[in-house]
Amino acid sequence: MGTLKVLLSAMALLVVQACSPVNNQIETTDAEKAFEKQLIKQLVMAKSGDVIEIPEGLHPISRGLSLNVDGVTIRGKGMNKSILSFKGQIAGAEGLLVNANDFTIEDLALEDTRGDALKVNEAQNVIIRRVRTEWTNGPDEKNGAYGIYPVQTQHTLIDGAVAIAASDAGIYVGQSKNVIVRNSRAEYNVAGIEIENTQGADVYNNIATNNTGGILVFNMPNLPQPGFATRVFNNKVVDNNTANFAAKGTAVAGVPAGSGVVINSNDKVEIFNNVIGDNDTANVIVSSYYSASFYSDKSTADAFDPYPETIYIYDNEFGKGGNSPDLMELQALRVAEFGIGGSLPDVLWDGYVNPEKSKDGVLFAEHQICINNGAAGIVNVDAANGYKNISTDIKPHQCQHEKLPAVVLPEYFNGK
Image (cartoon, rainbow, N blue to C red; front, side):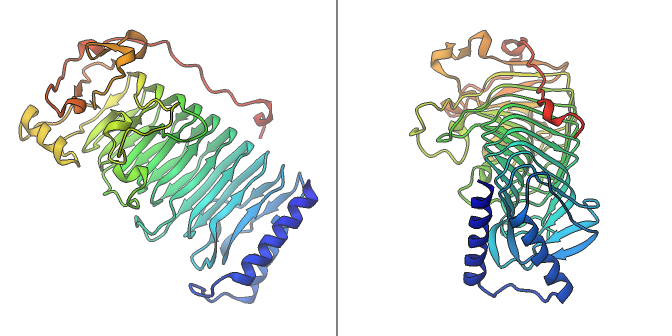
């Protein structure tokens, strides 16, 4: 199997080199060209147990890199010391694409990739540690969509990462199981940290600031699995007011600037012990697929549940927020309900409920949005009925859910 992967990688590399356009090429020295050639060779010829070292310095890379061998580590000298710069990239959809298990990447940076910076696909036992992804020109629709991008993985640790200026999500985990995202910083992305269609995720001790939306927990239709059981805790989610610069038609293009934590169509989500404030639309948004701007009709997958249910918000420290919503409807609602100088409550809910799990518009106890957070309030904007019955009644939400268990990574991660 390893020999086949090597042959396929080599053939793909030859095709890319033969067909690549020459535009966007930047001048590189002979030493820089030699480094890139050697790195590509190391990735193609890698064997399980290999450690590929990235030395200190800024290393121009002209083509997307790939790794298809299990058990490999890529290690630099630090995220601000060992830098792979793709500013002159002329080929490849990603900076680094990994299709391999037992993969570790640490202590380096990937800058200015043409597409996604680091994509890890269909892998088990993934460690992404002290890795920085950044588009150095700042927020721009032309930037790559994703910074750190594990998808369809199982047992994934993202620790101490930094993601800056992705046009979709800085740190994204999709369609995965058993995930930890911790001690990381996401800044100036459309979505700072996004957990999508993932089962069992702990997101903690992170900073999400200056994004369009700070931390997103989403479910989307027509994907292999639904997501549930995400805990968002001990994070700092502040000042996420950057104008949305996502490409039109993408899911996050509908995220309003000024969104702190956003739950869309996901179930069994806990938000606790976070510092959340200065998010101009709302500190927390709980919404269904129906009220999202990317929703166009009701022809979703049969197995898709568009409603957010069993949400538990407690023990957070809320700062000001909701004082200048990005959407005209919410701005008008704020003025009408709370006055010119007023603000929306900390929790904004679109009010959509599954008629099979509710009675007279009130969710059954096991599916409720529960808030146990001191003076924090909620506004139900009743979007399903055209904002006709807006409510700030906290009583239906003064409830509790059984707390979710912590995500535990397997023995493989011990000591790594």
